[in-house]
Length: 470
Image (cartoon, rainbow, N blue to C red; front, side, top):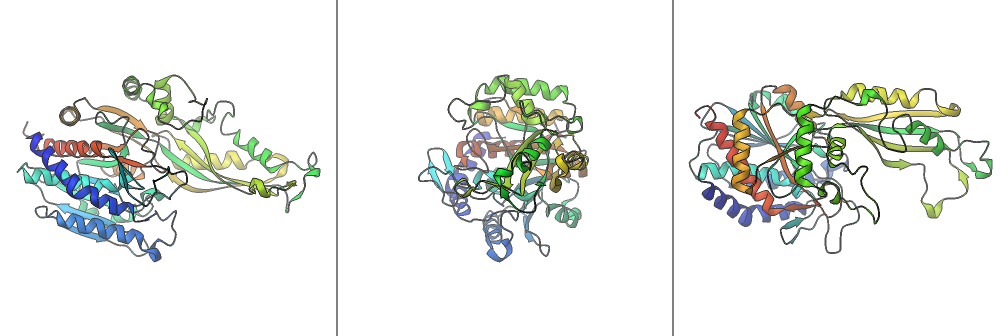
């Protein structure tokens, strides 16, 4: 493959077309349904889907068939079918829905206003994960422009990923015959440890969560009653201590753990050596604060393969300026428990509910209402052709070998695909590197990495075709 010709095509398309399109996409506040229940009335998701459809059609890829598929009451899915030179099928995945605004954006930056500063395109959603459609089609277009054969490619862009992909199984079922049986899956909704090489995601954690509510009074009473009436927040702390050690954060129940494969431990050590202190230095710690450990390999394994509890929301706590001397009737918190990739989220949810609700302190009314659960994913062993291809692609596009590492987040689609296509090979990668801050303020797309990653995708698609003739 003429990598120089591929790079010229990719860079040109990014500069002339993709970056302006992503800028327009950033301006659309198409928040995921979990954050915009009235998404149908607002029309922002449909607007983003229409923009993606327009641009995709303008690429005029040979034989391409495109449809925005809609199931009543569900977010749309962009389905693109591009015939190839072999009966094999490659499935490329991304999403177009976004996380909410978040506060704390730096001066001059805004979630819905695109800003380019140096190599970075700031704004919500470009890196997570709006770029995926553009990168995938640019890679295929580069191959077609240079007469390089490839397998049939199916591109699937959903609009519900940031809400847990609850609409996606319905589309996968309805489109099953049209999708076929992919033997290679490329997911572009992941991250990278740095911007110096291709990063391949080897695992994703699972996730369970819900609302824990502790009620001790039917109405608030004067805090002079303390010592007689237990504080609901103290009861809450006791319950949470059943789940994690408050001194270390270590999750206690064995049911929330899973064995860590030896290969993943080795890969974590290699990644730690490559990244060094940037593993934790990328996070905006306050002055004097730091990570939970100084062992870099253990930090990676903590994030990728061990459970962790976070409190992500609360009710029953008035703002400090309005906090009277009152024992509040209740405290409620939203729990998020990350699970190892191989841990069963259904069993974990039931265990969590049982631990929190049984034998409540002081006879308080305690309820845990689960509201999400997603399985993790552990990648199958790399086929020799793909291992070679990834190495050559990273060396060609970045000048360094690839790196392999799990991620602490969850992509529900990957577990679903792993179950449906157990014989498929996977390349899960992305552009969310140091300080890119997905879901938070000042989110950005690192433009040079996006271009190079597009070239890598073109390389592996070409090598996938050639694997049977090598």
